[in-house]
Amino acid sequence: MTRAERNEGPGPGRKLALIALVVAGVLAACAEDYQGGAACPALCPEQNVVVFDTTLDPVELDTTVGPFPTHGTETELLLAARGDTVDVRPVVRFDELPLYYNSGAPSDTVIEVIDSPYVRLRINKASSVYTRPVTFEVFDVDTTVGDSATAANDTSTALERLLFRPDRLIGAITYDSAEITDSLRIPLDSLTVITKLHNQQRLRLGIKATSAGPVNIRIVAYEGGESPVLRFFPTADTSFDEVTVLPKSTAPRNQVTLAADLTDYVHVMAFPPVPDPTFLTVGGVPGRRTLIRFNIPSRILDSSNVLRATLELTQRPVPSVDDTSTLTIFPLIVTAGTSITDVGRSAFLTNAPGAGFDSVQLAPRDSGVKEIEIVNALRAWSLGVSKTAQRAIVLRAGPEAVDPRFVSFFSSAAAASLRPRLRVSYSPVRSFGIP
Image 1 (cartoon, rainbow, N blue to C red):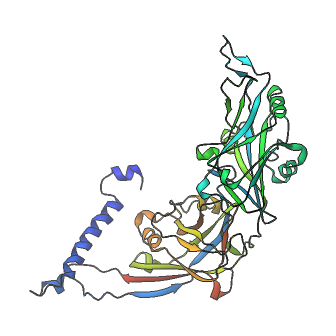
Image 2 (image 1 turned 90 degrees about the vertical axis):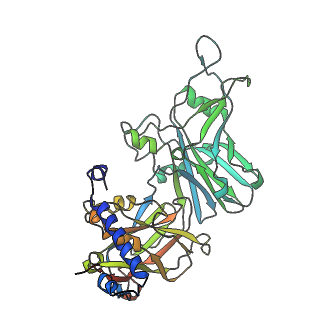
């Protein structure tokens, strides 16, 4: 409901709330089961409510949509290494480097040399996985000299993956697993950084991890509020304060929002095979969501009290990383209107995870029919204010794009016994009072 509707007096939502209070009061009176007179049977319906159970094949559209979050808008950057199975590498851009520092002189002093440069990464340690010593390597992955008008080449995984090579290595360090805290420092080559600075070139850092054990480290991104930073002493005299350089992307030109998104992002170099589009996939890297749009009979939405609504999906087992451990799946109601036809945008416009729906726990290796309760979606669609809203839900993993696990379901294109179904329990709308 809009702010204007709230200010116009008793709108549809307020009327429905008033009716609900009246109905609740009448039902409470009937629940007392008065024995003192004949008025109650006339004022209250019989206490045995007729409930209908039906199973529908209601899917109008179901599809997998991604990536989520969109490229460069992640609040955390995944740094993952699991042999040939998973390889995910973040990139951080420092497209503007300072030429001067405050030396205490009347004017700023030109930076002639730098000492002890490093990139600092803030880690979500509680949600990261590493069991053995981890080697962190940093590469110069700048693709061009100068600015570019589009981001096509700047963010190409095919191009930038070629730059993770020995002659581009500009920093490395190995941490024992016990030494990895919530903040990491990776030293950088001083000559490379000062050369970039003096020539006013871009410094774009690609980060790679290697280890004898699994690595799944979540780095706080620019959008997460504490981005990676570049630091160095602007002179050989380390009594001066360090210079801190915040990440920034200047490309693509004249597209400020997109350039900001590309301050940091990830490249997925290797990942387990994802089922083809005839299946519904949730999770993985990059993150994928499933959108399901329903066509539900009006007798259920408009003329009934929906007591329960269970979405039944048949899960298809998939080989994945940690495929026997459970992944949290959130059902979300789509808040987009019927005028929005782009499924990607519709899958983005949803309520927050955990708001009004219970999550479910599923492992990638699971199979068989899985049940997801969506009764609140049907109740929302029955309201007058929802007449122009899409009757659709989204299934998303929590969290997205930082967990390589994913689950898969059969879609409406599968055999009849495997398709999504909706099991609904409802009762006819009853009127109260003397006719």
